[in-house]
Length: 290
Image (tube, rainbow, N blue to C red):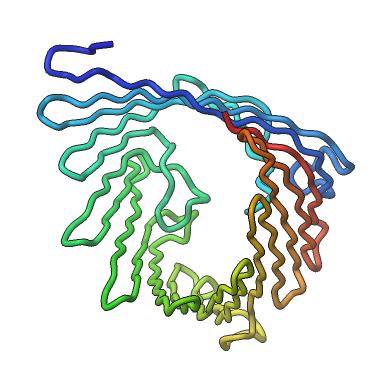
């Protein structure tokens, strides 16, 4: 299919996912359902792209979906998959830079839990990756700069979106020495309780990876030193199986297992025991990619 003179043939691709899950979460993801319940979903993505003779590429993407997908390996939220087909994003790329426009659909680069940004631009300068986003109506923005210095991977992020920390900045660094990776970060947000520092490591031993992070929280009563808060995890990955166990200083425990069944299908099981809350989660299910 030829779009116009001087424009190369367009490529159109289709992809999607679908799944079903049995969930018991004490009403955390949906307060109207406090016992076990089933959820199913589908998400169908369409992408069209073309490149002009002068090297400018343009892509258009949109997705349609229905139902709810349980986010069992992040924040346990039931994510609605009912995006309208009219909610499209357009990206224009040239000389290594990409401009993307998607009204209220672009992730904040400091905290991707918030996707209210409208436009982003991303590329590289002197070997450093640079990205910026903006919401014109709300007069907000975010940025991310990452690169390597003497083998140390550095990332700088920031935003002025109030819901994502407001005038917030973060510096993160990591250094790999064979199977051992050291990491550290420090962030500064509006409100001293949100300021925190982290130091940690991960060590890979064949199929097993062990990780530990010591956290220095902000202005939190009884916790102001590294190690007053901490995260510990063990991950096993071999063949089609990936399983992980995590615990923190509050005895909040997470166990997750994923098993690839082949042909784009996978099975999962997850259990999150959040100490001191009624927001525990137990779920099993199947996902399919096509």
